[in-house]
Image 1 (cartoon, rainbow, N blue to C red):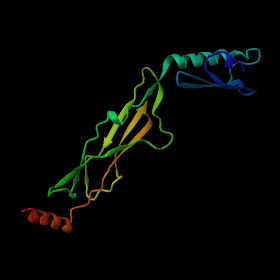
Image 2: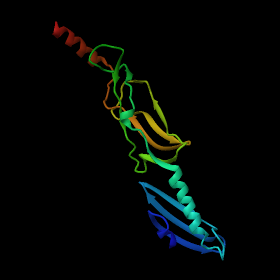
Image 3: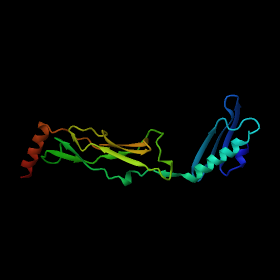
Image 4: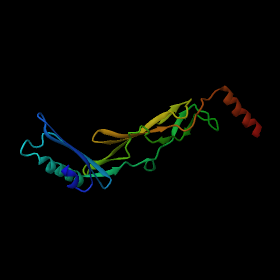
Length: 185
């Protein structure tokens, strides 16, 4: 097909014709780590079947000039605060203990590290996390997330989970704490 020789980086293309849609074309172009795909329907009728090439070229050029790949900022850019765990077993008698949750990157397979965006589009990073829990707390419990949103569409969601288990204060733990105090005297 003619488009493969028209633009640097043209990958593939397929032409077609139906009486309902006229001349059609689907093509792809890859340049500067960006991939663009064009699908044209009804692009020129008999005597104008070459319109699909000029239309494809215009659309690809528009994409090249107006879209850039932007990576989402990752966990190094996010300070995850500690969480208070009420009535949790700690090193001493206290009302609560603090635990440091960790970030688990999106493992869904379709998660994006970035996306092609217009220069005027922005990535909104939405951080949501609980500020306290009640014991017991299991390791791996989801306590929040970081979503990367462009124009209302979530492109990636990383989870924030507890790294450790915190047991609830009970009689045997209290007895152990009292014994530690007496032994240290």
